[in-house]
Image 1 (cartoon, rainbow, N blue to C red):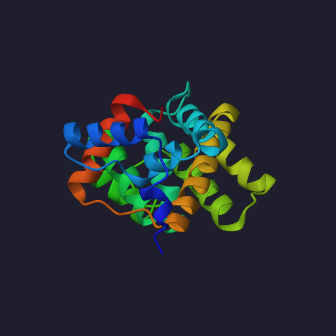
Image 2 (image 1 turned 90 degrees about the horizontal axis):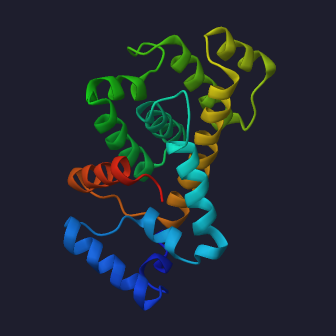
Image 3 (image 1 turned 135 degrees about the vertical axis):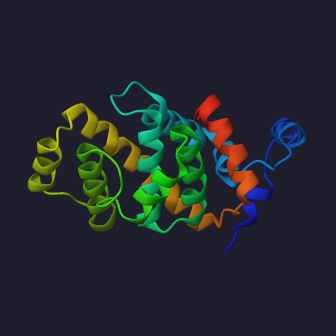
Length: 193
């Protein structure tokens, strides 16, 4: 059920910003962005900071890898909005839609390195079960993933476990392919600020 709160309750200046974005982009502001503008002191500012650091902060993972992780966590969570948004962004970042589709369909057979494959398996376990074991972590480390890379992947998972649940709770509108493509272009240019 879509909550009406995403359609109202903004300051006049914010409402004007939404209108300007729509005029220049040709697309309405995605509900994920609207949510961070609603009561920014309570949720929005902290969420933007967490997500931007996880997705664009310094990391041994590429931006494309982290966008793929976000898409994969969203697949596990069955969050249609976030799957669409981050599949489009990962596809644009990698410039390889077939690779992204293959990973999201089955990371065990996809054309990716063992480190990323092991990391995705660990993120899926964490997302489904809410915990991982020492053995899960040993498998990721044995695949050549550094402890810092594990921390960075866990940050991506945290950000998108939260966002996926909010997307479903608020009933985020699902844009078409053009809307997702416009969002992907923006996210790659500006990040999550």
